[in-house]
Length: 221
Image (cartoon, helix red, strand yellow):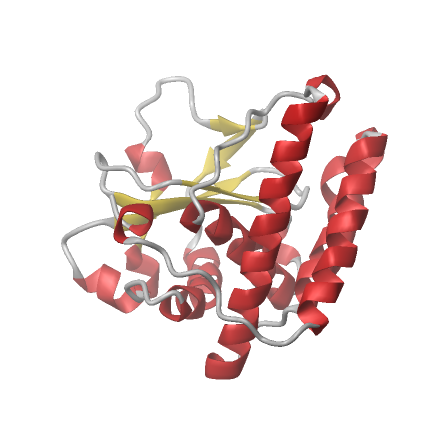
């Protein structure tokens, strides 16, 4: 059921040229990749009181979009619900992300769910060096908010389902510099990620708090 609950995004994208993300081609996930992501995603959905993958798989209604980005670099993206096709949300994972430790992959997926639940404004793919200072601050405020949401969610899944680790959020952030940005990272992005990692460490060490609950409009098309 978990595999069938995650829809093949490529079959839903209407393009003749082939879909891409940051210039990298997308492909359909293999069965083992869908299983791995499903096992990580399911407790996060249930902690948010959203339908489980078993429930979604058994339903004729909305599904979850899922595709793999062809690169060994490590990153994960999410996009909001759509009505046609009917998707709760969409996840895009790089081939590199599927190779990182399970707890770090869970942390970054929880971060993407935070963006979706909190209805953050999708960011452009333009280079960060050209983003004006005011806009940059707004982007980083969203990133910090999604980090904090993810940490609260990971704390809850750890308590209830015995999976996940809030410490993994900071570990993922610290590895994201070489894994995604490499040597091309700007000074302000490097500083922002370092600050986010320090904030994640502090939030993880703080008393447990429940994550924000999604409203129906935020979670379902």
